[in-house]
Image 1 (cartoon, rainbow, N blue to C red):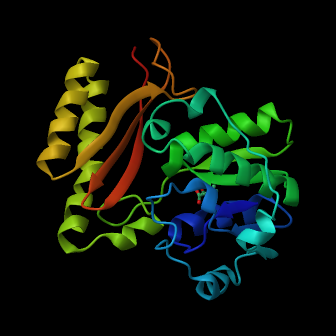
Image 2 (image 1 turned 135 degrees about the vertical axis):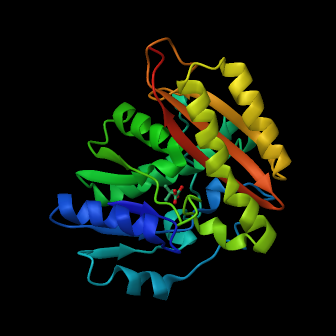
Amino acid sequence: MVPTMGTLHAGHLSLVEAAAAKADAVVVSTFVNPTQFGPSEDFDAYPRTEAEDVKKLTGRGVDVVFAPNAAEMYPQGFATSVTVGGPAAGLETDFRPHFFAGVATVVTKLLLAARPHFAFFGEKDYQQLLVVKRLTADLNIGTEIIGRPTVREADDLGLSSRNAYLDGAARRSASRLPAILRYVVVALEAGAPVETALADGHTALEREGFEVDYLALCDAATLAAPKFGAARRLLVAARIGSTRLIDNMAVAAEA
Ligand code: PAF
């Protein structure tokens, strides 16, 4: 299974390709899940391109496109929510407190509906990937969760359906975000003090016009504070105009 919210781009299609290479049958869901949007977020504006999505999936080894509506997923009387601790704590949750309960609930429903052997998620939403791994293990769902690398534009911006909101100037600034992340990764791997590297990254983002929600170095497996010798991950969420971007990169363990 490849769970998506539709408006498919090359990042989604790389997940579909990986799924088709691994599994006998592939289900792609394209449900724009209302419960993961906050009241002041972009649920109504979120792009919806169902007919184009189905076209894009044609000839890619997809057996089923599951595109339910909100009433089918959340019928009257629906009263259950899946709440995840561990990797869901902090980062996105500090700024979008509703988000992971919405994601965890819908992903649980999608996986229980399709009962796939494997489900594919992009590393672009790195915290989401770890939350989904946690919930499938904790709830014995029996699906192996496979994370796949972020697909990037030619200028390095991570692909996201929300990139469609970026106009000329904001789009140019957005393309600086990965470069700043890479600069922080290089500094950290060269042994710069974590606080200094993060503060420099923060300043560089602000200089490009970003309002930074967080720029954090975490344990790559748990998102807790990194321990010496553990693989690390640098995660960022920052707003340019009215568009909020997230990204992340691997950082080698301290040696
Ligand atoms: O990453 C997404 O597109 C969504 O959060 C997901 C996993 C499909 C749940 O709605």
